Amino acid sequence: MTPAPVPLSGPRFQTEPAELYREMRRDHGAVTPVVLDGDIPAWLVLGYRELHQVTGDPVLFSRDSELWNQWDRIPDDWPLLPMIGRKQPSILYTVGERHRERAAMISDALEAVDPFELRAQAERFADELIDAACAKGEIDLIGDYAALLPVRVLAMLYGFAEEQGPGLVTALNDMVNGRENALAGQQHLAGSMARLIADRKAAPASDVVSRMLANTAGFTDEEIIQDLMVMMAAGHQPTADWIGNSLRLMLTDERFAASLFGGRNSVAEAMNEVLWEDTPTQNVAGRWASRDAQLGGHRVRAGDLLLLGLQGANSDPQVRTDGSALTGGNNAHFSFGHGEHRCPFPAQEVAEVIARTGIEVVLDRLPDIDLAVPADALTRRPSPWLRGLTELPVRFTPTPALGGTPA
Image (cartoon, rainbow, N blue to C red):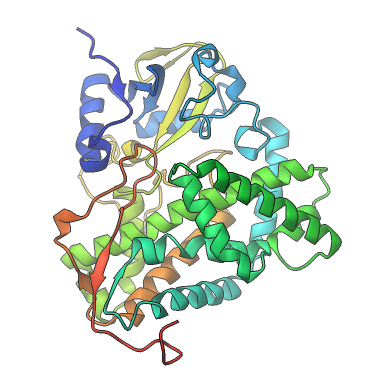
């Protein structure tokens, strides 16, 4: 008897995703039938080679959500609409030459970021967050640190005034965490982007928004606003989770103990291992089949939705035959996607600088840092999409703020 489709929900994505992906692969193979909220069918691509095939063929497996054969079953209040949208003007749902032009605009704007200035600003914001807690001897490295840092740095890169940072932090965290005021957060972010674009049209500066506006490919303000919102959302939460998941690994795995007491060589290794074993973006929606096709031993119909199982592919036993973590500089993971819709390389570099700086500031500033709770008491958000800790409480010997008093 054919095993039933797997609900893409439930506590196991929070507590034991690796075992769940193994069961899916055992029962269904490299491509697993799943059901989303409202009993909506989809395919979860777990195989490394199959995911490479899907992301590498944008004609057969399109990013055009208009192809979906389930739209007549999707209610207006479907909870996944913010993630799987229809007729959205952002780069996420643009295809063909127009997508390549938009991707080039974003890449060019980010590539011009000065890496030394980026690191300096990331250090400054990180130090301010540590200053607020260093005299207390304890801090939640998620809620009081990682969840606040990336958006502040990104806001500075875009050209926002520094006093706008806290409001953007609140709005974005409300959006990505699906809180009841998520819509208000989305509206605040969109309005802030629109005002920034108007300001930069009147007075260009050396920032990401000014460089995007200088592009000559003829993008509308609405297109740029949508792309800026995608860039900030995609850059903030996964980077925050990259920081949190890496710090958790370094605080709970004795292999990284030396880094907690003055060494730094293992920071990059921990960050890379997280991208293989505990990647912040676990699953991504999606691609739509433009015609009937065979994939992983299954018949995929035209208009079917395929979800990209990034963590499942990273742990595919067909490419992990020795069970190793594939660390030590091996970056052939899928954590940033693949193909023309992958995370642009300059965006990856920005995220890496922010994450590494955030981790190193913690290790530099907080002496004898240690978990304040047992490692097995740490919990994850109950999400099949983004994997991150709900909190990471630590304690340490109180130390003065850089300015002599807490901020």
